[in-house]
Length: 543
Image 1: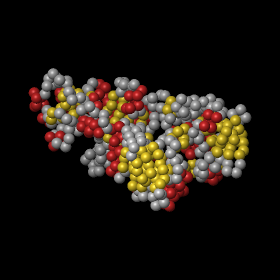
Image 2: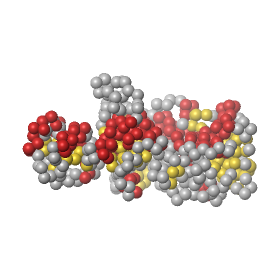
Image 3: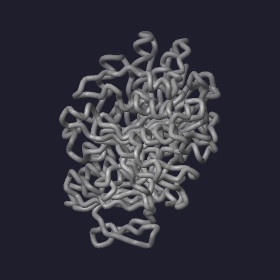
Image 4: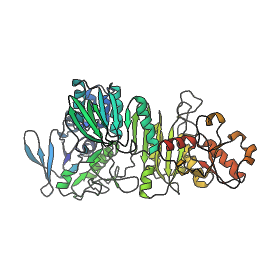
């Protein structure tokens, strides 16, 4: 069997190496149009910031290594420009020549290209591959650049902004949308903005880049707001688009979202052509077609293709929950599944739970606070989760992602048995706490309201201590500390619903339990004042 793979990096390289492990006799050829066949795409911003010091550390596997260890014929600087499905050949273009190569099975892993929205020119860069990165590094050094404009507030934009600061540049980040980090909801994305600002990045939201023009050795950037600025270099981090031109021209089916369409075994509408990685349409957390360009799924898809080429039936990577994480100076933010805005757009009814637990036992030194958000359905199904904090953030999302992948629900979170010792966790882990809160909401034990639902007409009871209230509170709230609530019940209205608020939701829950058992119609404010203040800053509240 002769297998031709178009594209290396995550999907193509993982497919080729597993195929060799499964079939020693197969003839395997990888065509890669760039200089590097397998490189650390996600590590590129950290090379710019100096965290990764050596260029060679960006190379995961060289062509020579793949040839020597796996007997794979790797041809770099070789672009496949045409597919003849009937003749089972591909046309390959190199700097020296153009030729045809036959195949028995063809695997397409062309990846995704960086969006530019028509912007470009000298001093304007994207960060798609090692060559882009080296060119950017050289430009900064040779031109003694001291300022940068980053266009786009997704993963690459946030990471490159941090690393440019670490390199000593003055950095502005402009995002056209009202918030950074699309996988997060607005109030959670604020934590990322705060971390960037604290690190020295000038963050502008609702601000797109309209044009870039070089004048007198500087780049003049104009924004959609009408503002402009001068800077030394511009990095476009505007997202990516699946590379599908080759597939389209070959008559392969393209999904409505623009990705290459495959079946559950990663086959296209041609039984001899498979596809994997950023270029394909996957099944998202909602069970519908989605584009989710992440390295983890691309690797798993490549492995599955290799198994299916040899007669297997693997479907490992077609369903993608979108588990992801980003480092922003001292903050880590992570998410999995659908966000609240995605659920709203789809018309899905949902509930949510906020929690603000410590990263490990509070009595053990060094604990810091996490911000967690869980989205779930009427029957306990988990729709998604988001988290932010200084440490142990991805751990919480990894656990929730595993539960989702295996078909678990909020009760599974409550039942999870996780490692505990004071330096590492609490006996009731943050994941357990989210499960407990969700169970209390679903069972009716603790009816819940959200910050955006509060109106000026609602009676809000703040059960924090007076000293806490002095540092900020919900406008118009009545303060009766939890520890003296029982002896002050006569001060409360018996004919109105009482919304109970505290710092993060725990004392509010205790207050609700007291009041409801004493005949009051009481409901807890999810996440307490901490969640309310985040939502208010995000423009989500009425009160």
